[in-house]
Image 1: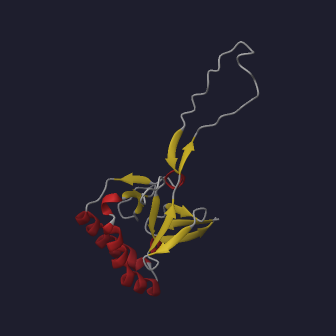
Image 2 (image 1 turned 60 degrees about the horizontal axis):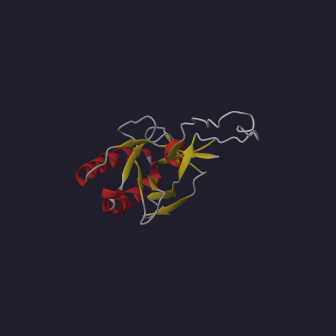
Image 3 (image 1 turned 180 degrees about the horizontal axis):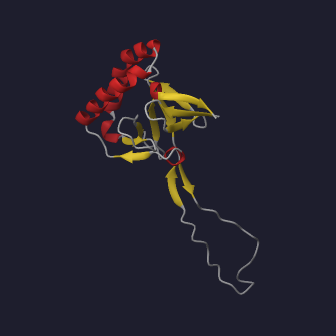
Length: 167
């Protein structure tokens, strides 16, 4: 199994259990998330409560609906950014990430990050913002949005900010 860690914080953000599609010249990975029910377990033991004189009391399971990626990697939702805040984040983020990349990736990153930034800016009002479990300010952001008519969210990751780790 492969886990993808944030190059800046070491937080686990994704794994190969979630297939991705490269977009924006490989700058972003697009992953489909799913709403799932967590905690609900309905066990049928074959007993008939009415025949045994008991009531079917049910079980208080505390079942909750969660998004699989958010729950699996303990992503923490952040307040939304406006365009000005997002551009300020991107400027700082590029300065932090660039030195961590090898020369070849640095060149590609600098060449294509503007296109990825414009793509994200075009969706800024529809995006949810997440950070890794450590909630460090200097880490990568993970973005989620709902495509037209979709009931499950689509996630966007900065591809060059992910470090592949074998488990």
